[in-house]
Length: 239
Image 1 (cartoon, rainbow, N blue to C red):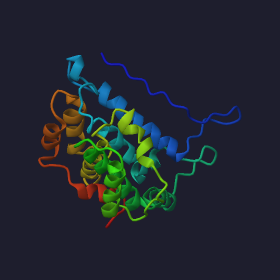
Image 2 (cartoon, rainbow, N blue to C red; image 1 turned 180 degrees about the horizontal axis):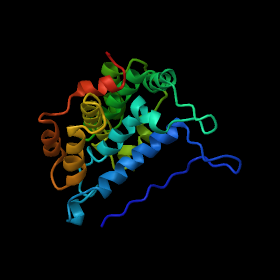
Image 3 (tube, helix red, strand yellow; image 1 turned 30 degrees about the horizontal axis):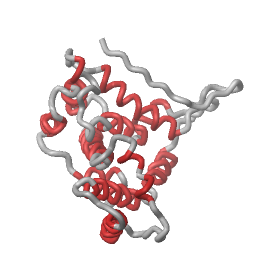
């Protein structure tokens, strides 16, 4: 039997209930996505059950997938009410929350592409002296709209790929988002609640854990590879 704990540092008060901000709700949904991935596994072999054995570039898929529902009106209106008046969060406010999330999202996407490609290319060869800076500059020429000042030495403190275990794997952040966005819209477009694909997601993605590659599981779920366009749609780009 699997166990999972969601440990969070949410606001508390002696004078009122613990009232979650929307970003707290997003965090809760995200971490619950990991917990459900672990708890709802149908695999009995511990090494590949739940979150165990899931590829680095897919382990964030279920968490980001559930996080996306924290912006959906049908979901928010179930619980997002004022603790005194019981007034439900309005459609106008939900639209504003989405607009804030997507503000300058294209710039953020370009920034992550810059980091990911730099990480890949840095690990493809030995770079010495000014070659590291020259490599980063060449990538920025192609992907960066806002050029950092010459004294910026971001690469010297890119802790994710030096001390965070992401060496040649920083791209996994964005690829997991592609999977989560594509699966999310497949369910949203069917109506969210009681959908066939929602039940398939439970059985295939959450149920199989790391017993198969996520590529196999995703193609079993959707019948095709994830579409990058779903991530653009999620971020309000080109919609």
